[in-house]
Amino acid sequence: MRLNILAFALGVGWLQHQAVLPELAWIWLLLSIAVAIGLVGFFRTAVHGVKSRVLLGFVFLVFGFCWAAILAHWRLSDSLPSIWERRDIQIVGVIANVPQENDRGVRFQFDVEHIKTEDAIVPKHIALTWYKVRQTGN
Image (cartoon, rainbow, N blue to C red; front, side, top):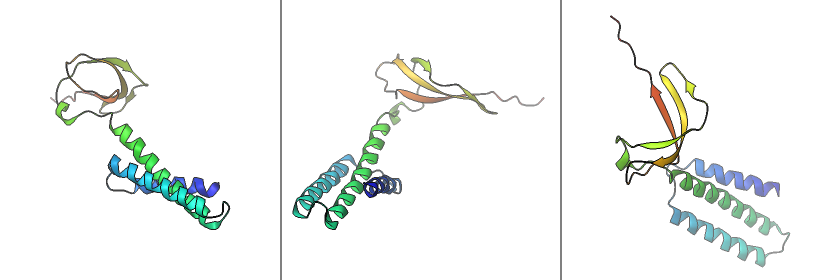
């Protein structure tokens, strides 16, 4: 059981070392192949055999990789489309956490409740920064 958890964690780590997030179609294909290999291998070997443990570890490794990739795709799907960058969008929402002040301004998380700009697509949770105006010396 512990080795399966370790294999799952290694699968998650494996995704973190990828230069590019794999497409969802490849993730589902990899997951399907892992399940098929796991089922075939499990039924062809003894339940407690070394081969079945290795195959089960491989399946958990792939599950960890696919789980992390699917969650990454899900999280990235809630982003501002490039067509709406650098455009004014009117939104209504609430400040979601305590604002953090630094020397350049104030940063805070904002939860969008309503989008007033017609046809605009905005993430549900955004990070906003209110920059301080710097005074030039006289």
